[in-house]
Length: 463
Image (tube, rainbow, N blue to C red; front, side):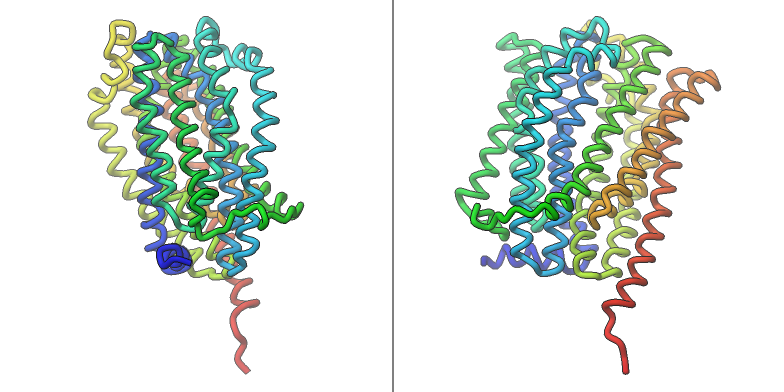
């Protein structure tokens, strides 16, 4: 075992504050790169006109489900591997990683068939209207290669679970940089249009998967040993992984359902152009949320290790420290979004076909800049629950926050209070904050109960 691999394990089992920083920073960079290539897709597609950009808006919720499949299984594997590492059971940690890969294959085959067969009725239900052909041209390609994205999410999570953020980041960087380079080539130079954006994404992600596969089975220098001989099928292990994977995946479906609901409200309030505006502005909001999601991903690993080791102090510290950092980062990013909203909006209005969208996008960004201030405590609480294997708790927080409170307040502010599009944006922000606060209270109660159990069961008793 190399010294570097040992240091990774020492890092995730040591001081939770240091572990969160060292895990979160590379994860933030990884997610920044992912979001940059998502924004690059939108910016290049925006040049094709408002209909093409709106089509990306309709596909984005479905793409979130697609990515969520891999990330969900990855989160389940990450949580289980981290708990076994915390308990110093490295044989089962290896087996947990292999179970995650097997799950990625099974799930990919099932969902590829389902999504491809029902693509048209799904888009019609979402109200894609005259943008449907653009949406189909993009979606058939993306969803046809579902396995690449699911496997990528699981492989990346395996690296993260053992504290190897360097290579997890490199793999994502390969995808992002290649996609940004290939987008304009496929869309405009090869004249593939919106289909070109899809092919650029597929090719980039495939190369990244090949790199990670080489590290795992070619080079074989992970802390974990993923040799097939270490796989021993366990229904209990499958179910344990799925206890986090299914709720985590469903959370992405919840986000997608929320996007469908919000898009429907936007169409009712101001037509399909409003969807294009919301799509562009939410890409910027998602970009600003990257540090928070990076912190949350670090919390998942650190919480899993602390839970497996029955270390309630580390679990409490990881949760509280990440929230404090999250709010500090959110204040800075929210201010930048608000102050520079007009300049940011011009990125999506560089052609005659999209120039009219600029002032509307700027207004949306101004209001939605508050969203990043409303979410840190909710995200960290959800990710802590995923880390300790309580994925259903995380799902319930997301259901309450997003599907119920955000959509209800958006409807009330827009249609009952008559605030129009601004009301929809404000309702999303307010609902997010209220739901996150309730999730935070629940997380604190859980940690307190876990501390009581740990002290009672694992603290040596004095005679």
